[in-house]
Amino acid sequence: MPVLKRAFLYAPWTGLWRHRGLVWQMTKRDVLGRYRGSFIGLAWSFFNPLLLLAIYTFVFSVIFKVKWRLKGSESTGDFALALFSGLIIFMLFSECLSKAPGLILANPNLVKKVVFPLEILPWVTLGSAFFHFLVSFGVLLAACLLITHTLHWTVVFVPLVVLPLLLISVGLIWFLSSLGVYLRDVGQAMALIIMALNFMCPIFYPLSSVPIQYRPLLYLNPITPLVEQMRNLVLEGGMPNWVQLGVATLVGLVFSFLGFMWFQKTRKGFADVL
Image (tube, rainbow, N blue to C red; front, side, top):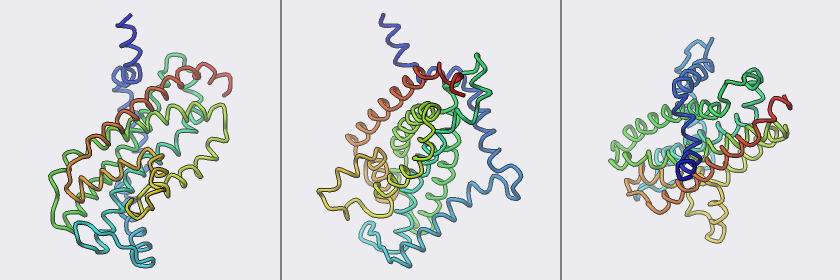
């Protein structure tokens, strides 16, 4: 019985390990396929976040004149770094959420293949989003060196922030991809949900600017503490908040496990609905 319990608890990860070669090939195909036929190809993965950073920085710091104080300094460059460090977290999360409801619907041929492990499709989506996150993170580190002429050693703790982000994201992909098969309205509603989560997260503003009585509402968004920790590690050079990261990781494990269980319970009806 203990062996069966361990197998049950490890189920979300055993599929990833068993089919790691297939996940890698499908992720690579998904990333390259996105830019196939474009003139500069994969370089768009670098220019997209750079252009997004420039637009947001211009609108919020030049037009709205929003300032962000980092270690006693206050400049447009500080705002750009603070904005982008939160934005790259949210971009990974939102890419996963936006693709999830249509993931199974877009692959009816795979659903009808009895031997194909459908549970790996969310890992492919997550892998593609994670690739773009790594590119954007490289842009962030380069911008830190260019603007502040320093790079804090605490960036080595960033994987501790990324881990719960990946766990939460893959759990939601499992859940939403299954739900989207039976309830097509999920895909239509996701754009509004993503927009709400965007503004209910301290990306364009510091958490300290939110009245204390409303801050718990922002923590209903699971990536709020991850955005705060990313800024703390990369921009402030502070040590991680171990309790906050521990809770976030636990939440991520719960999300991923429940999402996987839901997916496995509902996948039997996919072929009938499609």
